[in-house]
Image (cartoon, rainbow, N blue to C red; front, top):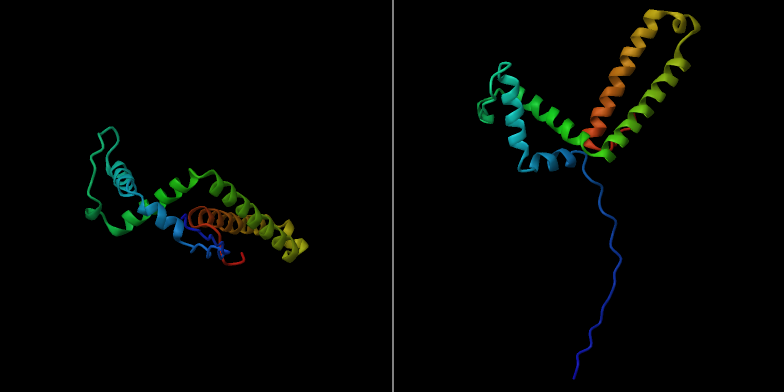
Length: 145
């Protein structure tokens, strides 16, 4: 006699939110990541015109290694077109918010002062670049900026 199989379907809960630093962890976990970083550091440390000789990651100053790893993460993140477009959109949003704030808070005199505008433009540029880099590497932000 054939057996009867009962199939039951259950609702699956939504996937929990992805931690803010999960993306860099995934990129760092790639087997090639350390090799890429070692090659980049080696290229940085070589003099122009010389062949690149791979240096040991452990022999590097931690600050240099960290800086190259962060730049490598940024570079790898730019290869993801979705992350790039989201990062650009968030940077544009930050730019619009900052410009609106400058126009809302600035007096007529300040808005005609080239030094004031230059100062505000530097602050805005730093905020926009910072937001772009953070979004590109680490994904969505939980802060309202």
